[in-house]
Length: 202
Image 1 (spheres, rainbow, N blue to C red):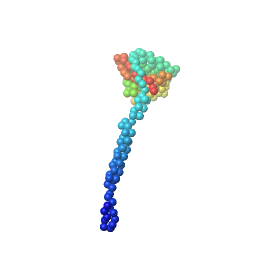
Image 2: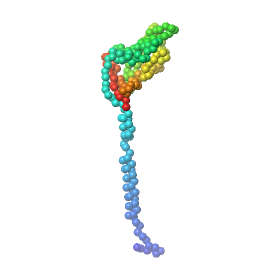
Image 3: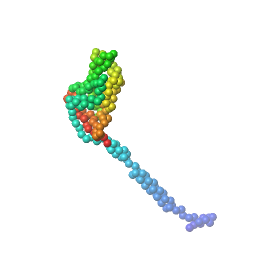
């Protein structure tokens, strides 16, 4: 060791010590970053798994004809008929046709509504008015729809929209003990091809 002019001893600076501490802290920081990256999933797999679990299961497909569909509709709508207001809904080779009665000033006038059916992305069915016939009367569609909603009894899964003059049939809302429902796959009245996919609820 060397003495300086004042008689104090100059100790060599411990550079290796500081270099080691710097290297150690760098390694620890790198380790923390790597651990954090490893623990963070690239995708939220728990959410994906939950969506797959919640999805209903497709268990089959069935085809029907207009005649068979009409028989099914008649049977299902029996409980929705009343003594004062009864109606029919059936498929022709072009339209879904609603037949009922429109009362005006005590007169009972035959009511015919022609619907153009289409399937929606969720498998439900939308009936869009093509033509309304109320005897020789010319009535606004909105007024006719309001009359239907007021006097006729419809299934709980059927929604009438008087503003758009449409009927929305939510097939997946039909309740049964087996927890199954159908989605419209193909609605081709002209070629008599009507196909539904069958699903079971989770």
